[in-house]
Image 1 (cartoon, helix red, strand yellow):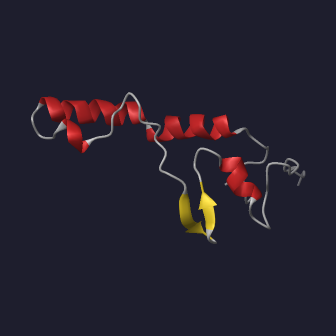
Image 2 (cartoon, one colour):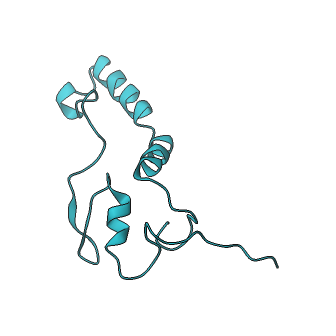
Amino acid sequence: MRRWGQIGEQKPDSWYKDIAKKVYRPDIYAQAALALIAEGKAQVSDFPEFASESGFKAPQPDFIDNIVYDGSEPNAYLDQFKIGFKRRCHTVKRFKQ
């Protein structure tokens, strides 16, 4: 969304992580997983170690345009593209209609 101007201002990597936590709600996932384990419908080994899990996959080498995607560093990922908004881009200016 930042690359194509849908997020107008530059944001730090931490901002993207905070937004993802609000949307994907790992706390609800963990609560549901623990309930399944308690009910005997799943095993502890079926789930990640919630206390140490970062929520990020290892960098993905073939994500888009063969540019390595590391979700923990979204700005560095954006900076690799030739086109689109990057870390150093100015904010989107809104024009009055």
